[in-house]
Image (tube, rainbow, N blue to C red; front, side, top):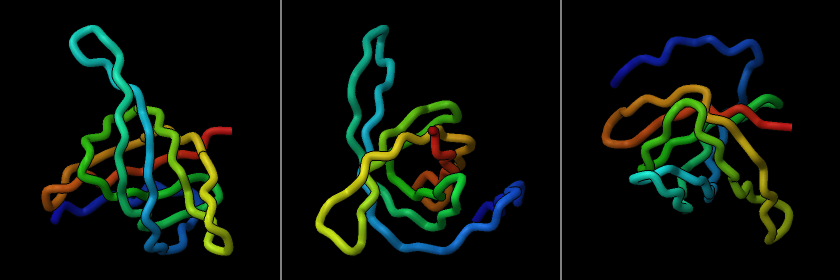
Length: 99
C-alpha cells in the first residue's frame, strides 16, 4: 500500500461513514452528471478523507451528502478534491470543504 505523505495543518478524527456524492465531468466535449458513493475515513473542520471506487482528480468539485447521525437526513456539502491516489483498487482522496 502506498504511504500518503502527511501535509495536514489540522488534525482529523477517524470516522467510518457511508457518503454519496454527485459531480459533473466532461466526457467527449459534453458534460455529464456522475453519481457515486464512498466511505468517509476521517474528518476535520477543513475537510474529509474519502475512499471510493470512482476515479477522482485534483480540482474536481463534489457535492457530498453527509449523513447526520441523529436524524434520517443528510446534508449537502460542497468539496474540492485536493489530492487523489489509487490504492488497492480504490481511490483515496482528500476533500476540502468549500464555503
